[in-house]
Image 1: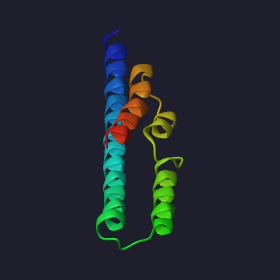
Image 2: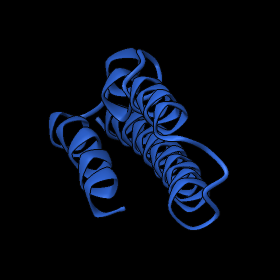
Image 3: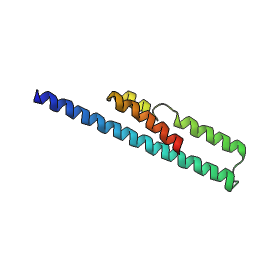
Length: 101
């Protein structure tokens, strides 16, 4: 019984670490995207170094890259089986980070 408990605990810790790494990766991606959008806004609004068409094109590319498969915590959670509560929390955290940024 003790061996089973240790095995389950070890698996749970490994999955928890994997989810934490996935969340950290999602946070880094959200931060990088926010920085890219901030530079785009600055180039358009303050520096006037790009026109509206270029601004729209780059903004659409940023939106597409943030929603591409494999770039979200949700797709990461699908590839790595985790506990149900943690798996549901990772995509929600990413969405909150993207919305807050």
